[in-house]
Image 1 (cartoon, chains in turn brown, blue):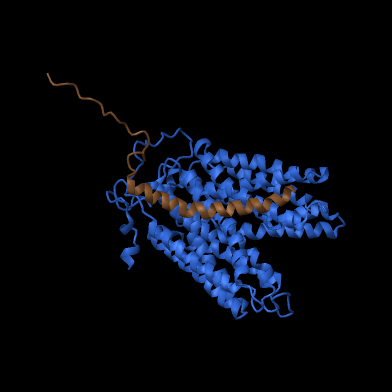
Image 2 (cartoon, rainbow over the protein chains, first blue to last red):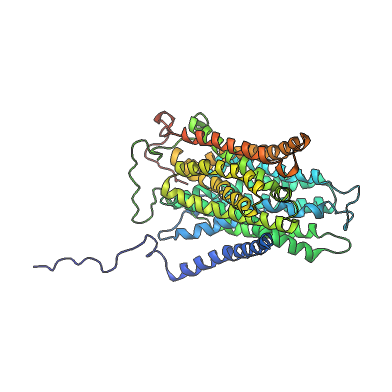
Length: 55
Length: 458
């Protein structure tokens, strides 16, 4: 008698989980840093200016 | 060259990670969002000839105000006119055209400043740059909706948040550059515009080359489209951009966007003067600038927050929140002035500005829900004419009503009260327009032109 088929040990928890390779992680990181860092700088500068409102 | 830019060339390979698309969209929107920071150049541009002070031959503030107005007008016009083309050509081609228009607009504007020819600035930044704004604004919309059918609101909200955030970066960067380039013979604006133009051209082009479109029928792995309940606002078919103009739903949404923007844009333009007049002696120019910065932050944050929330509670309910909460906030503003409560005043406007931004960010997903995803970019472009109208209506309402009140003998600190009640009334009209939005009937559905040959969904 053939052994019963085992279910896969790992199931995809999220649609993206299996799609991300090492190279993609680097690309993703660079792309998000590229837009995120300048934006974060802008937000911090604005917050610094906004402090004047509460002084 | 044309094949390198064509939509067919950028169909994503299997296992492409869709989270690479939002940074490309942000690259576009963060650059064009500079438009909100144009006012940092107002003072130096009035001193281009005098350098340290304005000469009689220098440009006047009223003349400079037209640069922004022309740009906003061409934003709406180009989005409406080129929407269909953007949809047909795909995001790489339209992203590059937007980059060229926006970057060249700055460079031509810089020549206009250098030669002191205002018409060149109007043409460069206003006309050409305005077209870059319109094309760039709608470029990522349909691509993001195709990649994120499960989170349409969040995905488009993230990109449009970039438009709000662009000014946060551009404002301090421009000040920094002007300081760097200023000399006894120059205000530094020309050089700053050259640097900004080249930077935006580069960053937007990089974003344009990063775009990929999904293959026809692509779905996120494991995602099953939810079954629509009867009467729910979920499109079962696509409506063409031409046909959409004959539907009641389009015009209801046009009113919704127009009045929501009118209410917010009028406040945004006058925020600094308003807080100083209402709290005279308490709030100085520095604190008022801080208030404007805070409003920009909430404008940006609201774009992401409300658009993401709309994925959970639905678009109609989200706009319902705007038009219930909004009038209450506007009505509270005069009260905060009477009470002398700066905190209440600031809090009211911060909430108002989140809904102003949220209105922009949620509308593409609302359109996709009602008219289908196939032509959403083109339809969105046509709807943006509401922005152009609001761009004139909002400031006119705030400025002229203020003048009228002051001429009628009302004290300056109370001159905005009637305006606030009018803004609240506009939002109540928008509430009913939103309420009237129902699913589109099947007679507006696009006929199957080529059965069996399905085009790309982007």
